[in-house]
Length: 173
Length: 123
Image (cartoon, rainbow over all chains, first blue to last red; front, side, top):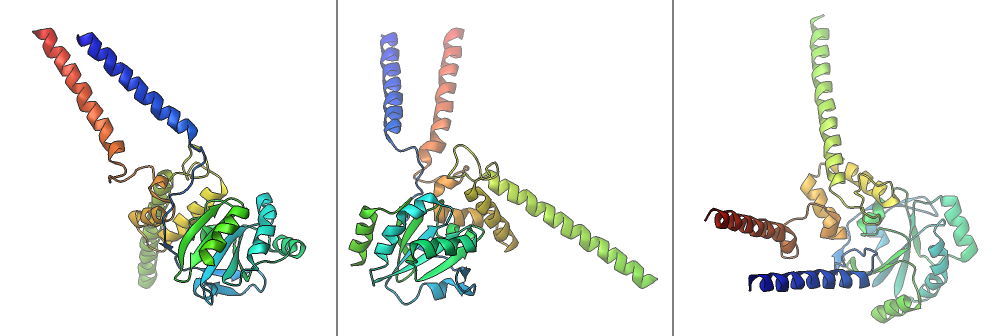
């Protein structure tokens, strides 16, 4: 009787382990940061890529109901791929498109924009990567939809696609 | 001569304090970066990793310590940005109670089984 209970318990234990591991195999192995809705932005100071003037977050996030902040760099291949999507997004007048140039050579960044077009209303630089941490970013490209009261509504990790543009436009309208 | 002596004593005392403070801060930076997970690497702490993300986080830790933030405040800041997962030594809450409670439960369960076996053998 005791042996039977032990066997049943062992079977249950191994079934549980199998189930947990099997479920884990189906999940993505890429870590996605916990999505904290309506996270308030911290204040920061950066530099304008084009005129090299100091600019505060207060000055960056003003004059629009919605802001889309895109983290990009000239050395990032997926950024080149998503650029047409950003050019498309720039047509939406309800959005202020902000570029965050991440750990990049300013000359190369300007060449990148001259070649592919500049969709951004303003481009700030992040030479050390600390500003992207303020947004909770962990890689590039990454895009954040930010509300008027400086809260992050949605985060798009990786390059933007047609679906993400649709999502942004449906929220902004 | 007396003034020079006082100046030298003060100079050495101040130097000693600034060196010990810098050393203390360095140890704190290492402690914090060892307790943070590199979210873009596999199985590495911020301290071990040389990824872009880890380098930026290390710099951020330096800045925050220089700004006078405590260890707990730095963890809180990063938890707000990246969630509880970024910290290896997680706090006890409703999301982590299994993580903290299960080893204790298994320990007592194992202990009870061993104890029972010993008592059973004696009788």
